[in-house]
Image (tube, rainbow, N blue to C red; front, side, top):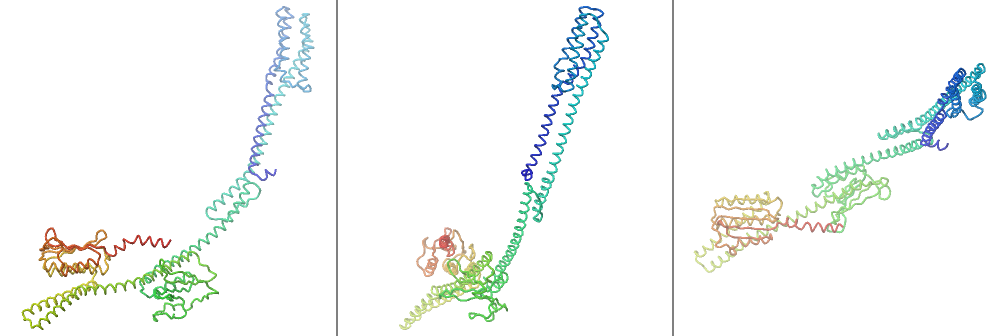
Length: 630
């Protein structure tokens, strides 16, 4: 019983077993009753034939009485024998109950008694005496027929009783089956269908993220247990979902705040990277905005002195007074907050110290204060690390820009000094020697005709020195004011086109910002020196200057259609050619001077620019940095 109370499956199985058992019992009983009724119709037929056989015996006896022949005697005996055989036939005796107390058995015994004690002896007596006593025979016949009718009636009633019993049993089992089915349907409806509907409703509501529905199932069966489990699960899911929603809301809020911080950092990078050397004016507004978004502060930035082993305070937000290191008293970046946040080191606040570094180079530290009770999340820490990296990049770029400017200034001065030394200084030295020669000639009272040649050389040298000075001024002015090497070469070709009275073509195919200022000066001076030689010596009607970049090398070629060289070898050591070769050697390149196949001269300079050499060494440097990082 406890199992049936606690298990819906057990109840359903029990109902099915009960229905199946009753159906089986009904089938067995039906088969038994049907088996017991088998032969009743034959017995009724046999019993009915006994009445006919009785009349046949009487009719045969009457014929035998009128005509006592052997045939009629044989007919009487046949009918008598047939009556006895039918009376004891198995079809008749099998339908009669074995119990002696049964009325049908008693009636059968009465008919046997009448046959064997009354009608049978009377038939033998008639055959033997050939005299028929009509009154006694009629009475005996009527009694026998009445008994046979009674037995037939009893046989019919017995068969009808079996049929009624079978009908009653069928109705009984049908009623029992209906009761069991009703109980099973009631149990299924209240303990299976309705709980399943409640579970489906709960599942449907759960798919809609509504965990407030409860099945409220009672009982101890499987679905009740499942319903209570689902109720607990829904309650846990509701709490978990509410917690997840709160967490998602917090994460969304944090992401929005992080997005705003990233936007502030992105917008602040423009002023940070383009703010020159003033980190206060460029970084302070960005840091203050970040403090408001992240609810932290103050933020202090200190940088390492590259020359002294000490840290110099550079920037502090929410400062109550102007710092002592301030270089611009017109700047109020540190004094914008009228109510600065005061966080003592040991009581109310904690400090997050982040390194401001690029690679292995430590540039300084970034102090970030925040309330002690509010722990910084991982996303906020990543944002602050990105902020420290951004400040480190800005400081590093500012220092590199200052260094590059300093190196560029030194390089410009070196280039100017070298150009003055290689051109104007040598010309002045030559003029100095000519003046000393002229003084010796005047001391010796040399004739004026001889001195006139020296004066001509002085005049030529002065003109050459003045021309070189103008070229130098033009070169440096072009470099400082022009758009680069291409513009300077274009002006040079236009100048020599006017001086030569012949076209000078320019073909320029070099990526921008490939050459440094020193390399541009040397290329320009080699081209100008080559065009000057063409103007002086080549008697050319056409010239061209081509600069191209192929296979990580610069190719400069100056060609003309002039008289060319005496042979195909390089010319002897002349003053201008020496300077050109020195410049080519300085560039680390190769200078080739030879005759063109179509006539004229071709001067070609080939060298690898400094940028290309740096690119070539970049993979090794990158691997070194990677190894150091590991």
